[in-house]
Image (cartoon, rainbow, N blue to C red; front, top):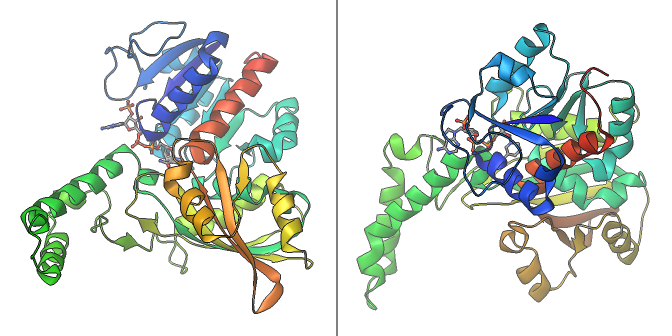
Length: 379
Ligand code: NAP
């Protein structure tokens, strides 16, 4: 089996490759690496795989069409261009995609196998070949509240997010750091003086933030370091951002409830100046009143990655933090308590590394499901 990987040097792609190396995935198939920007260059020697180390051109239709599976983390624009082109040329392989481009298409299964393995299996059985990773916030939230949604306890969910800069990609992370570095340089000398006045420091910081050049805000368009942006992705002109809209439709599609009773979902998505991991403050309206202890047990037992953090100050500070979840598959959820205004409503706080469970990991696992079942491309 030949697996083509496109977009492997970006944020999601790099994390994907790291995970594939950790799990020894490259032993199970031949790999062809593609690039849309530096074909002909070499794939890093650190990546051990079966296949040529020369990068193929991401727009080379015949090199792509050789592949039984194409896994792309390149982005929507690439998918929009290349997938229909390959299909029109008769290519019938599996398409695994990190982007949002085809998530809501009828043919597509949004993959999050700890929750929807049965949908994945029936899609494979019926010959479906498009498998997309879900929106990062949705996947991390579902991993956290898996126990409650699995047993159909949830009537509605409202989530306010704190999403990391890396949600935008590699260049966005660099922009955040560049801004932070510039701010620091302006106040470095004042910080080292014991008697410097805090309002002088504050004014210099604000001045710097308000005067970033266009280049320094190229990705986010407004300052992010030391600030936040309560809007992510496009404006749908109906009061919701595209990121918030995805929360509702994708969550229900993953649960298969788009065809039956839907969980009502409301998101307010906020970009914050942190590097990695999306955090969420969540309110869940349950269909019945449950004891907090029972809720914590249901949450904790749902899958091997979710970790219930006791609702205590020290535990919350240590384990409910992006730093604790970053670079791991852990999904901590804590601050679980009953809301005062409605005793069937609970609030909670959860964090997930959006590059792992929110992006790379479901794709990696989907690739292994296909490879392990050894589906030939013309089935
Ligand atoms: P990204 O970091 O911007 O990378 C995308 C591609 O951009 C790379 O694979 C690379 O492709 C190219 N690129 C150009 N300049 C680059 C540079 N300086 N460093 C690295 N790559 C560069 O985007 P991403 O965050 O990985 O997102 C990829 C897709 O996954 C998007 O559709 C996104 O919406 C989706 N997604 C992202 C996240 C997330 O948290 N970031 C979560 C879920 C889904 P070439 O080698 O071909 O040039």
